[in-house]
Image 1: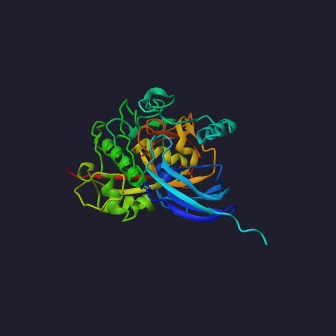
Image 2: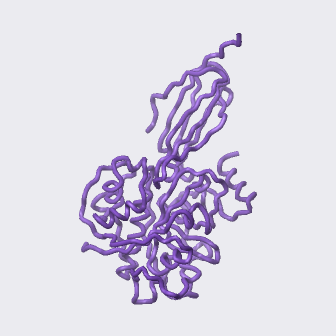
Image 3: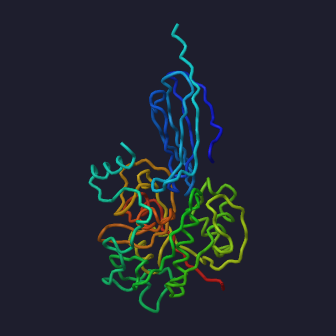
Length: 103
Length: 281
């Protein structure tokens, strides 16, 4: 699926955001991710394998944190390392507001 | 540092010998370019000797299997069929089963040129259900389906790489029975005496970057369970020779070699050793 209408996630500066995507790892595919490092940072990622069936899709959880206010796009592409073309694209927009001041 | 560089660095730091990379278009792997493949004349002829192919009895003989068997080169002939590509659908169980049955058909008929292309779609989409592409399948269930319903020809029900609706077609092969083989020596004998077998393995993230050599994982991170067709072994190199279903641009022309004891292939997962019967085509 090519995501022409990106999903928007509202967040605040410094608030962790988790994005979970399924992927067919047993078919040779994995997600690659791109974003503007000035405004967003990737805190980490983990993979979950819940099925004992062969060929079942796994899940990948990406954990981001916004560094500045505004709308920041995170682009995901599902592809095999040995192939040029991605088979699926997903865009997520982080709609970031400033953190509330500590009272 | 990119993922490929990370994998390459891990291979070096762990003292492993396989090669990571991406196969360039137009430079696909040539079968004769690596050492150690081919059926060894140090042992008996596979199948028990000329005129005895196939040996579909499950009683193992008392002799030892040879140190090396590769069904791409037994008696100088290729008893495997073309490497295929499952694309994004988790139909590996059906691909591995069909690849194994296609080879077994050649061996049954003692004709390496009898290239039957079985319908992965017939097996998978009529057996694994409506969400098979996402949910995967089990090898035992695939073999039950092969025993009860059989498998037809690809030309009658073509694979598209996406979830398809079941279409029942005429079958050309059935599995009459099968055996789960766990013992290390019996695994070799099953391949040597009767042909390729169906196996299961854990896919680690670095496996996607495999290009050549004897694979051993550099990471414990698993991204899925995978079914494959094991077409040979090499005791000298300490590896199984395996046909994958990720197309010919991956690995050694779509095949790979994997070290003994890796990824559960010869550990937690049995080899499935099917006996087949051909139905008139």
